[in-house]
Each structure stands twice: as structure tokens, then as C-alpha cells.
Image (cartoon, rainbow, N blue to C red; front, side, top):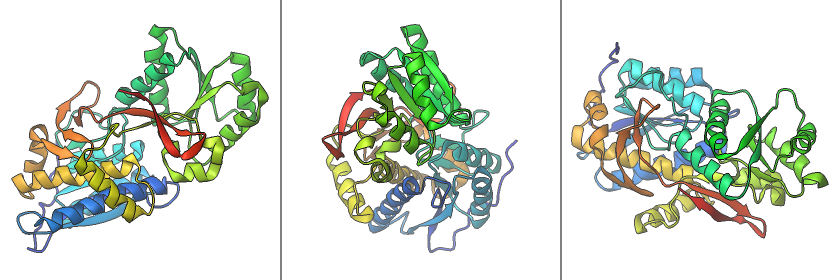
Length: 367
């Protein structure tokens, strides 16, 4: 049963939207900064265009620090402050906690960037998501591996609902197609010992289902230094190499490690304009995560213009959304195994950093 929180308050000056982002460790701070940059830029653009029925959007930001309990508490606080909806979050386990609390409170939550399929334990109308479900994106990644000739694929994994879910998606998709997934438990292996396991299992690819900077940086460094593994391909489907911090930590060693990102091959003129503005705001190339942040506010602004700040009205609008985002037209539908309203689908690419120019990305596969 839904417990209704205090209805949104309007003081005549602004429409409040809550924003959940990881801005301190152990959260991925750079990812949080990119989500927030996208959210803030979109708020600026909406307000420059007249806001919501003449009222500006006010973003009320809370740092989750990758802590599910902190995120749930933030949702409670934001609901009490009278926000019309909550947006954001990057880490899947944190977004899952936020989604559960938003559902319990009857507070609309538009998740920007987390991909875990089961974002809620049961179907809900209060939660929608822009990022693709993990099973969708990671199956595309598995198809890339098969197309590149890989059949013996090792995964170096840490214990986490997110990593376990990813490994399961890979295993279920690869096994019927002749692929084998060899799971290496990073609780029991030092990064250097991973190399011996790869040789023993005759793996041709190693996927990093681990946190950054550690143990990811140490694993990559160990594999790159081992002459027995000169031909092995490393991959990071969760997208760690997207961010400048990865390149800063690993330099040339961080190139040629394919990962998933959610951008089209070519941006529309609208997307290109947003990219330029994001680059100025970040003083760096924007990641796909920044575009997810922008599109989140673009969707919420459209819904709020049509429905006002009534929370039930906002949640009821997910199936009728049709918004031109930075990466394509956004529509929501129900998908098997998700339980939330899902954009089906954002563009998906497998890319890597070019070894000849690590600041440049190469598109290897699209889905």
C-alpha cells in the first residue's frame, strides 16, 4: 500500500525537483558531477524558456555518496520539502534504495543513469528510468564479444548485486551461443594472481566487474605487464573507461578496453548544442552520463508543464511521454523483469579509447 507523503508545496516562486547524485567517496564522484552538470544545464535552459507555467525549476541536490541508506533518507527529506519529483542517481544499488522509498511515499522518481534490471521488488507506477536495463545493454556487449571471436571469457568480479546481475546476463546470453564465462572471485585473488588464472583457463577476454580505482587499476596494470597475456582483451562493460579519471589513472594502459556507453553515432543538432554547453560547464568532454542528466530534466519539465506539480499526475504521465531528448525521442514502456517505466531504448554503443590517441573514442559495435 502506498503511504502518501505531504503533497507538493508551492510558494509561488519555484517548482522543486530533488536530485540524487554521488558527490563524495566512496561514490564515483566524477560520474556524479557529470549527472549534476546535465541536470543543472537543463534546468537553466528550461528556466530561460519560461520555466513551468512561469515558475522556475529549483534543483534541490542531495549527495548519496553511493550509500543506499543515505539515499533513502534523502528521498524522505525531499518528500517533506515538497519536491514534485526526484531525479538522478548513478549507482544501481543506490538507485534501487531510492526507488523503493519513492514508491512507498508516492513520490515520482525518474532515474537517470542506473541500469540494474530489478530497480524495484514489484511493479510500480511511481518510477521511470532513462538508462537501458542492464540485461539489454550487456547482451549487446556479449554479442560484441562473440563477434570478435571470444568464447572463453573470464570475469573478475567483486561481491555486489550489480556485478552478480551482470555476470548472470553474460553467462545466460553467451552459453547458448558457445561461450563460456569463467568467474574469478576478487575476494580471494590478488590482482597479480588474476594473471595466473587467465593463463590456466585459457581465457581470451577478461571483463572487469570491479570498482575503480581499485582493484580495477591494479588488475589492468598486472595484465598489461604479463607477457603471457599480450593477446588478451580486457573489457569494462559498466563504463569505467568513459571518464577522465580512468585515463588519468592508467594512461596508455587504459586504452583498448571496450565499454558500454549510451550515445548515438551522431548527435542531432539539439544534442550537439547541449554537448557544447556541457563541455563549457565541465571544462572537459561530457560523458554519456551528462546527457542522461540533461534528458532527465527535459522529460520532467514536459510532464510538469502538462500536469503541474501533482505527484500522482506526474507518475500517471510516464506512458504518455514523448520528448525529444539529446540522444533521440524518449518514450516509456513496460519491459519484462523491470517493474518500472523504461525508455525503450536509448542508443547503445561498445567503444574504447584509441591506443594511438587515448583521448579519442572508437565505436566498435552498436545495438
